[in-house]
Image (cartoon, rainbow, N blue to C red):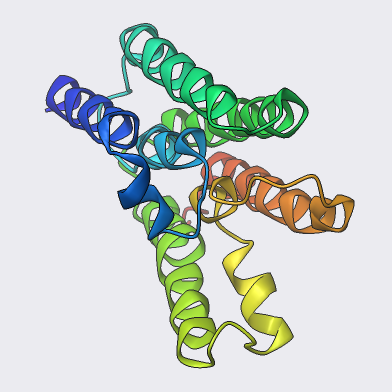
Length: 186
C-alpha cells in the first residue's frame, strides 16, 4: 500500500507540470512547484502502520519537483521565490515524516494530523472563499496550520513568515504528540 500511495503522490505532483498555462491561470497563477509540493507534504505525514520508504519517495519527488520548478522559472517566477518555499517544504516534510514514523499506528497522532493538516485548514479556506477572499483574520491563521495549505503560497512577501512558522510549529507539535506515550493505569 505504501508504494502505491507514493506512486499516486508522484502522479499528482506531476499533474501541474503537464497542465497548460490556461489551467494554472484559472488557479490564480500559482506556481507549479507549489501544487507539486502538496501531495508530497500530505504523504510525508500521513498516519500509517508501516513507515514510508523515504528513499523511494524522495527518488520520485525530486524529479517532479525539479521539473515543476524549472517550468515555473521559465514562466516568470524568480528563483528567490521558489527556493525558500522548496526548502521550507523539505524541512516541514522531514519533521512531519519523523512524527509519522514515531507514531506508527497511533490513533492520537492520526486524529491530530487529520484535524491540524486537513479539517481546520479546509474549513478556514471554505470560510475565506465564501467571504470572497476577504475572510476573517482567523481564516488565515487556520489555513496556516497545514503544511500543504502553506505550500500553495509562493510570494516574496516577508509578512508571510509567521504563517509559515505556524505550519512548521504544527509539524513539531505532531512530533511531540507522536512521542508522548499514553500512561498506563496501574
